[in-house]
Length: 374
Length: 204
Ligand SMILES: [Zn+2]
Image (cartoon, rainbow over all chains, first blue to last red; front, side, top):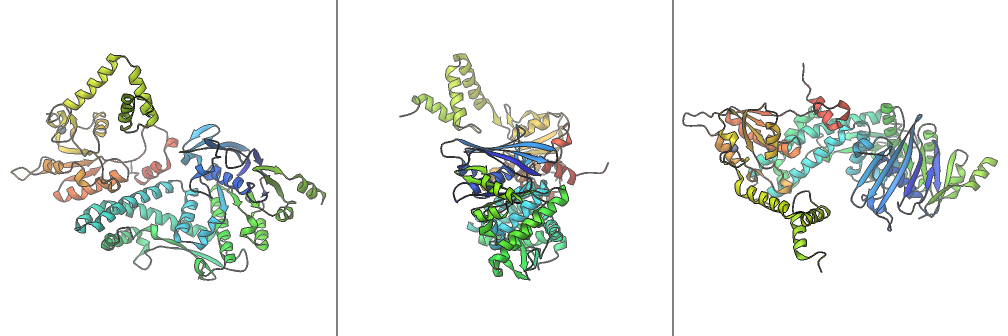
């Protein structure tokens, strides 16, 4: 799978279109010229989500009502035209000119992005790690998104009841009302737990723990019910914990039990990386996780998603960049952005190099000529 | 200053209160009314007046009706041993269209949704319990209750709540099955529906 071409209309300050090679592509330019916006556009076209903002409408240019991203994706000899229309109130997706539901649109182009925000996975709260897992599972198991959405909806309903109960003089009368929501949490929560445990096992099998040599990365799904009973019989354990802690949940006014409290444990030389890892170790760990996610994806679909790295040199040192690019070579279409011309020059012999100025990306002829001359 | 003369604005505002009607649609409807011949608008006004005057909720099953009790509740050919519980009157119509169900109905007028402040008190559950109360000889004519609330989290919670409430009273409680729409191709089923259909497969 690779993106041949993308065109942006009224999207941030971008103009025109860009063509990519199926291997390594380096997009470079001074800050605020639009190199990250091109990567954002690609990620948005692939996932309908932005890695910069949770409100993609912010990317619509001030003088326009809507932004349009168009791309051509190649899979073997097949090509497909994808289009994403972003308006003030909605996003519309099209495949070969025909409107498609987002659930059906997704999967035509899959992308993994390594960005400053993604560092939250190895640095931040469990929530980002759960999201990392959920996104990976959804790649390979489409019905998972439905279970997850339903779980979150049930949780919201239950939390509304818990808030009410905690304010009430007679919390006991809420027990029977909470039960129907707990029953659904057990069914959906077990499904989510099983999918995540399974996915982490898959990831572990594809983990290349010493890729960057310096450190050993290990992962484990850490259920919030660990040490509370038999995780092998998760549905029963969850049911038991939910009824056991109902009074505590009412006391605090929100839900305390379930897979929305779980975590992915990432260990670096057997220390928890988010707390004890150095910044370099955290970057290595995230890359190793991303690459494992790509391998799991490959195992299912026999093709690789595209890999995006925003601000390459800000996030990675030279050694890591070399190892990473060597690893990706021949596997995944890779599109990286950098503000340093020296980096673009270093890889010109093996990459398509694009210079971004005022939102327009052009093949850098000077670099190309120099590259050919060597 | 108002965009339109006051009566027009007033009409647009009233249309905007209707479910699923935004500002643009309300405007379109208002201008349709303005342009329409007098007979047409009189008919609409009369239809609204009539429905408000003549249609009431059945005191037994809460269905919409012009006679109380409604035709289902008073029908002699209906099977009085089974009650099908639905969320809205239009759900009842959908089931009735099959012509295969001959039992009684009970309309809840909603589903449990704590976010929207809808609890059991807001649903018509009390008169369901009254219907199920045993007679002098200690028996109830009802044997089975079919829970036909919607297959979403709210409908599921409502069915679950009712099951817990009614099962201890000795009734047979059933839940309608969920799965693929018949007559369509498997390829058109969304992943979630397909997932549920697979999970609920049965031996043949
Ligand atoms: Zn009736």
